[in-house]
Image (cartoon, rainbow, N blue to C red; front, side, top):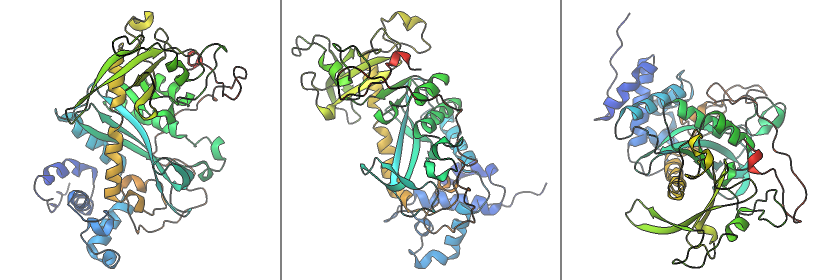
Length: 425
């Protein structure tokens, strides 16, 4: 076999890292392109890192420079697999003692949206963009992150493909909801060796039975926020929403806390805060049930909207009868609050990084390209009307899921009634 031609090295210690990926690229041009890409990402720049910026060229006018064209070809046309590169990155993280995952951390799930005009760009559609707090034309990416409060790093990301890209819409076998994609990414992270205490997510995922089912099949615990006013079935004289269940807990003052337990939260800057937490009862939720409702707040008397969490978890109460048979170790209130308190790291990890790298600037036609970090000016590819219908060769898939829980009428008027959590997965 012909020996590989030497590649121009990346600057400084970056070469040692880049060399760990060389076997994933079969040509000298690819290995050089990978080094140029890494160097451009890490080098300080005064603007979003589009292709011209990554190559150190002038915007627009420098787009035809050889270095820019070479980098564009590497990102958009060269036949290398982004998922294999990401798998190698995660492998290197597992090997280092400072970044190796352990069972005390969490896998955080979130989705992030950016505005995007037009209809030809892959994965774009009119949908809810949480970053802007409204429905607009854009692209949404489902992401996972691992953190223990000491270190944090992204694991996987996959763009959500709106239903109109599929021949049969939401009924198409290839269509996946954001909760389905998220659960598949969490299971994939576990298979890749990133153990965790629980999967943590905000209230957008608590309404999906498919999400709960997929996590249970993967053997993953969860701590997920609930919408405070989302109703569930219960007798007329009992609470019907998480906030009603919280108000039903007894509280007098800090010296006589009733049902509440003080929990000390530790923040990265060194300061601490005293919160209050309690196990509440709501329909099938309870400390002795497979699914618990934990309320955490800074003030049990007023339950301030921005400083109160309503959390569902399948981590058993230490005193529950099923704690000894549960596949997950029991967790006290302090542990539940600690786990959900790690969730904001995903905002730190992705929002600023996307702004810096110009994630919203790309224009690509083929689905796999956003995973490579493609940026402005990528050339269109010939596509058939159905070329965007499938999730693509790099898209994770999940098996078919059962229909959502049926609604139940009755109870107080004006509230939605769904099956209680005891009947959920």
